[in-house]
Structure formats: C-alpha cells, structure tokens
Length: 314
Image (tube, rainbow, N blue to C red):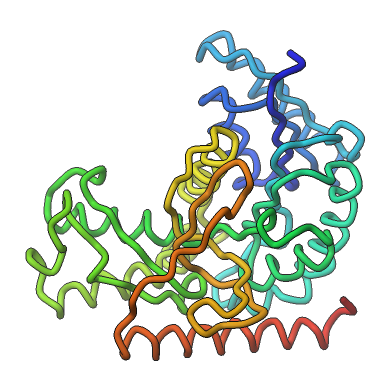
C-alpha cells in the first residue's frame, strides 16, 4: 500500500530482528531489515512475514543486504554493531562500533533524507552524537534509545517490589544510559502517588543500582549475548510515538544546547516525541544533588565523545 509508513532496521541480530517482530505484530509500518551478512536478513524477514497469516498482520517484511529497498523510510533504527561481551565495558565497543555506525548512517541519510533516526547500539549516547554528525540531519530527527529501556527496567523492579501492575508505575530517569543513569525518585509514582511513600530510601537505592546494572546482569546470565526483548520493545515505543504523532513524554537521548546547563552533547532527558521527532525537551526543576549527578554523568558521556574524536575522523 502506497500510504503505509516504512521503517528500516539496520542490523538483523537479536535486537534488530526483535524490533522487526514488534513492528510487524503492531502493524505499525512496512519493515526493511538490513544486514551485511548475506541471507540472514532475507531469511529472518521471510520467516517473520510468514507469521502474518497466524498473527493477522498485513505489513510487508523484507530482508536485504543493500540500501536500495530502504529508500524513503520514515524511521531508521540503528542496531548494528558488535555485541557487548562479559567483562567488556560500553567504551570498549567504541572503536569497533564507530566505524560501523558512521558508514551505515551515511548510506541511509542519502536514501532516506527525511527520516528520524533512533540509535540503539552502544555506547548509545556517543553513537547518537556520531549519527547526527554523519547524517547532517537536524537535531530533532536524531535521537538515542536508552532512557525508555532504563525506565522499563526500573518500573519492572518497582512493580515486583510493591506487587502492583507495571502499568501503574510511572518513572523518569535522566543522564547517560546504564551506569551513568540519574534516577529521579521524586518524579517516580505509583498511579500518581510518589514511590517514596511506599519504599524506603535505602531499598529504593538498591533498586536503582540494579537498574543501572540491568544490561550487565543480563549479559552475565546469557554469557554469549546481551538483552534484546526489552531494548527492542523500548525502541518500538519510540517509533510508535513518531509514526502516530502521539506526543509521548519519554526519556530519550536528545541533543542539548544549554538545557540543564549542558551543551553540545546527546544526553538522556524527558522529551516530547511526535511526528517531528524530538519536538520538545522538558526541563525539570532539579535539586542540587540531582544537578551534581547530572553533571557527573554528562562528564562521562563527554569523555566518551572526546575519545571518539581521537579514534575516528568526524
């Protein structure tokens, strides 16, 4: 159908193919799965397409090794890159994934000049910065997925702790993805009631620490891979907000130009996500302690970007 939206997923690994699965099952858009390995995107695409009659979705799903089929995509999801292995920091991935990211973004920017780009590969905040430079796109149309995933993990643990529905937990997090995350218990609620009414500061801190290490916990359990169900679901929540112009308030890595006192950096903040991409950045009134955590997190992300500059030319 001519009026269907199109979403390209770069990287047909676990995260990419699971993104394709969520997209198709929700009938959000036609899906193009791109990977350099011959046969993998084609096979996964065909397999997913054949589940359509059972699940009742009519979108097109194709796999390819070229960028021709991606032309005029509405959203591009970047998942390609080396996976994090046990003992490997996100920064260890920097050099490996930077070249892959730069090359892929340059290609897709030519074929889909009006797309929104969502970066998922790690280290996410740094790769999103690189994606904006490599694409030349306006800042509103390049963003990173990390905050939605961190918030999902946080909400999961809080719901388990309180034995309530995950749907009734609303959580806001800021800062870099993972270890650099800045929790905001004041802005975390259970059906509108502050979570601090239910959980002691000490226990809340334990839950926050588990959330920060959420990705590492899964890596250590899987041993030969990293998380993909929740990262993919979080990414598709962002895609849905853009394609349906939902104006969702979500934590995402957005390009800051003075907001929260941070300049020239992609950083996790609350944003309004709609058809224009990051349509607004919401500035929350932070306490001195929260500001200090934000500043520390920003320094770590900036250090990663500075390291990137020494590794590749951009």
